Length: 134
Image 1 (tube, rainbow, N blue to C red):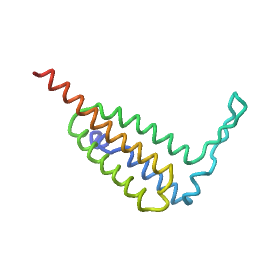
Image 2 (tube, one colour):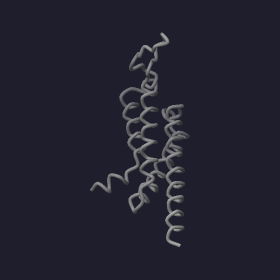
Image 3 (cartoon, rainbow, N blue to C red):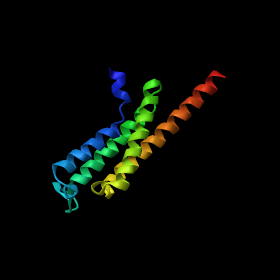
Image 4 (cartoon, rainbow, N blue to C red):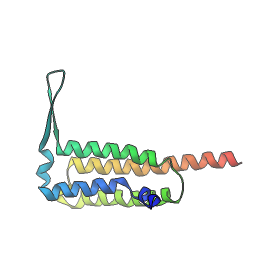
C-alpha cells in the first residue's frame, strides 16, 4: 500500500487543489489576500491564494525531486504518471480559460521541471549503477 502511494505524483494533488480553489470561487479568487505579514523593513507582505498555491508547488517540487532519487518499479510508475500530469497541465493551460493564468502556468512549469528532473536523476543513477557493475 505504501509503495502505491509513492507512485502517485504529488503534482496531481496540487492540480486537484487548484481546481477546488477555483470551484470555491472563480479564477478571481487567486488574487484574494489571505495574510498580511509585517516585515522588519516596515513593508507589509500580502500573501494571496495564488502565492499560497505557488509555495505549495515549490514544496511539492522539492519532494518530487527527492523522490526521484529512489529506484524501483514505483519510480517508473511515478515518472509515467508525472508525465501524464504535466501533459494535462499543458493542455488545460492552452484550452481552458480559468486555467490560462500565470499561477496555473507556473504550477505546470514546476510539473515539467519535475518530469525532466525525475528522468535526469534516474538516468544518472542508472549510469552510476552500470559503471559500478562493470
